[in-house]
Amino acid sequence: MTDETVQTGGFSDQFQSSYGPSWLTIKEILALHEKQLERFGGPAGLRDSGALESVLNRARNKWEYEGADLAMLGAAHAYGIARNHPFVDGNKRAAFVSMMLLLRKNGVKFAPPQTEATKIMLEVAAGNIGEEGLARWIRDNWPKTAD
Image (cartoon, rainbow, N blue to C red; front, top):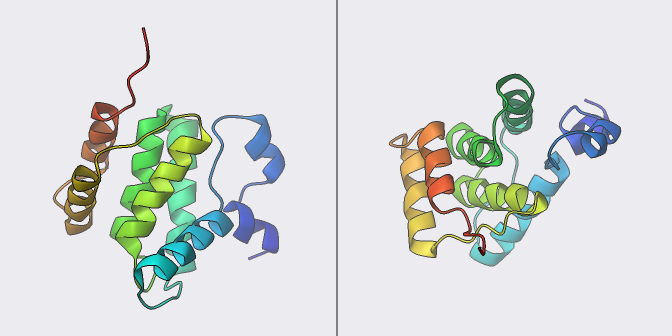
């Protein structure tokens, strides 16, 4: 894997900036995960870099081939990290924070109640809520626009 692949999840920065949503990079997700471990504790380490890379590629494929909206792209990130466990510890936290960052990078000030966010991520990680259900929850908690 080249340095560019590690930083961009297999896609070039030129493609990233010229078309579609602003995507997360592996480097960003690793930094988010590290900050969460510093704040909440837990053993550090990336257990499976391929699992993390597949999360990013899956979201891009959903955009390219399914025309997925931002809620689905956020759900793809969170679901993939929560279910694939790319990290030694902190997968649910990394999943939620990655979803939040993707939405924020794309102009969505997503801020669901903390208790609901915790509950949904526990349900996703346990396999009780799928990717579509998580996307529906994101849409249900989408920020209201002023009329």
